[in-house]
Length: 87
Image (cartoon, rainbow, N blue to C red; front, side, top):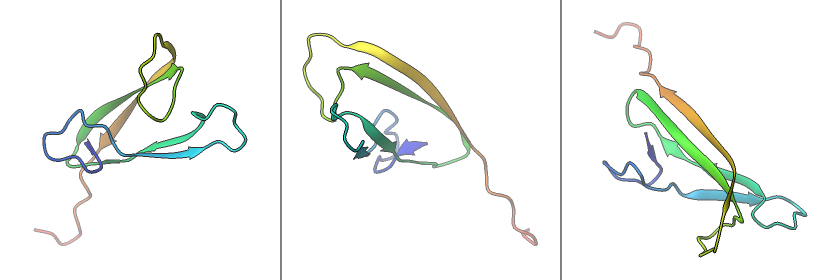
């Protein structure tokens, strides 16, 4: 599994981010974040996501950050079913 736009062997590449801000939020980092990945072969991958404060859409040098939440999503990609009549 690799992120959209990554080349072969780019395992740690960051995916292109699609961000939709939360309407009326005073904290501009609040909203919906979408990370697109593409399955390149059957297998299993773990995606680790961490949310830190202060946050934001662009990398910024900060004196300190605090871990707010961390979670792991396990993605299982299976081979497509064989078509009827295939040799």
